Image (cartoon, rainbow, N blue to C red; front, side):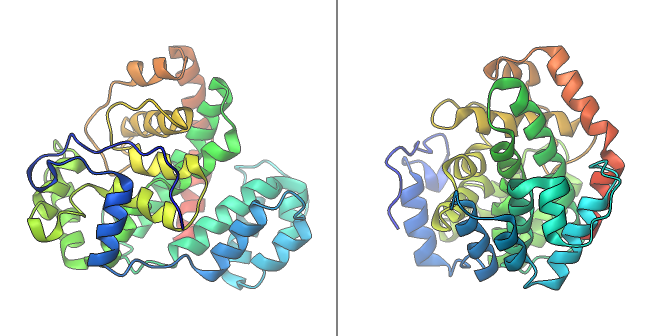
Length: 310
């Protein structure tokens, strides 16, 4: 599958990655070193429906209902207080038509299906439990920020939901090293994830993983043919600054992650300059306060949904 032409270099790295690397380079080398998981068939079918402007709620429901577990998860989500709907929700089609809408159901369903590509522990700061909690909070907050800066909230939600798949990929490919990375995350809260990943993966034999979970997550999303903003948000969310293609979505995810650190959510604990991130999106302090207040209002429901998904 061809890659889009505009790909930023990763020249800020040190050690074995001193030379400039593009996502093309990383993808080629990763595929030589490791067997990357394909997108699960159900996730691929959902992705194809999202790309079809004539797809219907009935078609989406029929695909999702092939997986009874996913069906029950989505119906539970639609019934949650998070969404405030007081009527009866008895099917996925009800969830689409009455509460969530086609786009939100498709994005959450695709996330549920795609996670099944990885064999990763549930427990620990980088386990599936915390992954879902972080992803749902980031998705909700990214969408809230997008509404305030002119980006499309549904796409921002998808970017936030899927931005951290690189960590799952590391856990799937290198479980022993992933366990060690999780231990370091707990014992070195003052270190950035980039620093921790360099400690674990900085050797020449694993240099492609040392580019960081963001970069390899972007590579995976591109190989899976996900939308451009989703690829960029994954690939660039570990960078302190980003301007370029799909920058509203990348910076919305960065800012969402930065704000979530204040309440201990996420795998990255080192504070960011939220004022600078907000300025890139044209947002003021009151915008951040309002968006964060929206998250606080639904925190219990996000936690319940994360528990259900994991």
